[in-house]
Each structure stands twice: as C-alpha cells, then as structure tokens.
Length: 374
Ligand code: OSB
Ligand code: MG
Image (cartoon, rainbow, N blue to C red; front, top):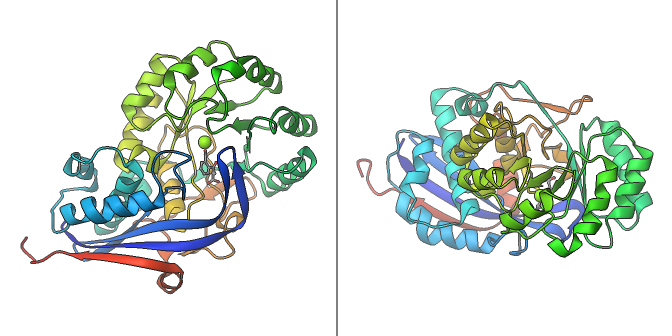
C-alpha cells in the first residue's frame, strides 16, 4: 500500500445532551477525522481525543499538531505491506497514541477494502454480533438517573455503567441497584478518588458490581494494586493502559481484573489486537470502551469488538444516543437484544456521508505524495 494522500479535518458536532464525568461536562465535540488514500482506495479513521487534557494528556489540539507537523509529512508517499506495519514506521514519535491511532486505523480500513473483506475479518474477528452496554453521565439526582437506566434497559442494553464522582456516587448507585437488583451494573470514576478514599470505596462492594473502572490516578497502576487487595469489586483499568506492556504490568501487580481497551488510547488496531490477545491468554476479560465517537470511530469499535478477547459488553451503542444525525450511512443501530450486527461489506462497512462531513468541517489540512514512484 502506498500512502498517496492524507486529509485531516476538524469537525464540530453537538451531542444531543451534555455528558458529565468526574472531569467535566461536554456537549460540543471537536473531532478530527483522517482520510487516507492508499492504492486508490480511501480509508477513514477518527481521533478520539477529548477537547481538554482532563481524560488523558492529549487534546484535539495536540493531535492536530502531532498529525500535521510530524505524522503526515513523514508518512506521505511511504509504502507499507500492511496497516499493521504502521506503528513501526512511526516509532520515533513518543506517546500521542490517539493521534497515531486516527491515521493507523484509516489504513486498516483501506487495507480491508483493497482485500475485499470486512475490517472485522481482517482483524481476525469472529463474532457476527457484538454485545452492547451504555455509559450514563452524572445526573442531577438519583431519581433522574434511575429513570435513564430504565429507558436504556427498555432499549435492550446488556450492561449499564454509571459515571460517579465524590458526592455523586454512593446514593446514586444505591438507588439504581435497589430498583434493578439483577442487572449487570458497573461504575466509572475517571480517576476521581485516592487511596485515602479506600474505606468509602469498600462500601460499593455491597452493590455486587461487575466492575469499578479507574477509581484512582490516571497514570497510577501501583495504587490500584493496593486498592484491589482491599475491595471485593473487580477493578477495571482504562486511563492507565496505553500498551500491552501496561496491561501486563497491571495484571502482574493485580491492579485490575478487567481491562478496558480503547483504540485511541492504545494507539490503534495493531496494539489493541495484541492487548486483547495477551489478556485472553491470561483469562482477563476485556471490553471496548467509548469516547463519544462519531460514526467513523464507532464503526472501528464495532470491528474491534468482534475479536474473541472481548467477552464483556462494550460502551458501543446506537448513533442516535449521541447525535441527531450521524456522519455515516446507515447509522449504528442496536437490536432489541442489545447487540449490534457486524457489517459484512468490505472495510468499515458503513459509508461516510461526505456532504455532511463537509458541512461540519471547520478546518482541513492535506498532504499529497509527490511522484507515483516515491
Ligand atoms: O472513561 O469511558 C470513559 C467518555 C469520554 C471520556 C472517557 C470515557 C467516556 C465514556 C463514554 O464513558 C462512553 C461512550 O462513548 O458512550
Ligand atoms: Mg472509563
């Protein structure tokens, strides 16, 4: 595959309603889309950064800088046997996994189309249908949260995850658990607590949660290993895990019993695939996390979730939960059993609505390879 052109664009999309986590509230999304043309075929990727450096250290702005000033100028015109060779090509660039992932994943889409296979199959996925859960933002009061949970369960979702933060945690989870004693329920703190909160976090054991996601420091595997020894609830790490090596460190230290895999956070499909395999070999369940993606990122998440290590429902849900109108056709839909049927057409299996993307674009950068034989 020769990388003939790269187009990077920033699109602005408004979520149907504000999404609150322990680190802030977002409604106006700034999303970067990457379109790569390789051997005449166009592939799409999404950069899953947040707008502020409060989930991890990247932002939509830093990803724009890293792709525009380092990744795109370096890889334009280069030849690759396959998309999985991309990480080695750019190994001189440290960190910035989300920026890298946007470009690498576009190449995976292109490669799948060139080979005439669905991306899920190129990755080695086996499922025809993936299990879906939802992530619910922090609400005003427990009653409002219970009402939301009820609606999502009625739609068929197989697992409910509640965002929590100090002061909006125990009572909220208690109200949901009381109303729905048997559902698969988890919580996500996005690094809002410290080891000094251990006694408080122990109280969540009574709720029989599937997991507690990232309670402690975003870069602190060690403290999670201390906490996991003191609570019964399984810890799942999200923010801490950027690579298979991080996942193995966490497993070895018994810092978690479950791993959240996000394509952007781990740097793309190549590393995500390696990570789910390493976890599967050690019988550590993984699931696909979400970053409030547009349809492009969502389609990549669906393809990744077909790999056999993904044994728990992911945060991959219907387009309509986020957007009045998505940028892909058809939009992502969830069955009444809380599953998504995996597309069977080559590449991502959804087509990007170019007119709509154009309307949402606020800035655009392009790179073109110089000569056919570069
Ligand atoms: O921690 O999983 C997270 C959204 C933004 C940043 C971090 C997280 C989330 C979510 C949303 O939980 C998941 C989704 O896309 O629905
Ligand atoms: Mg999380």
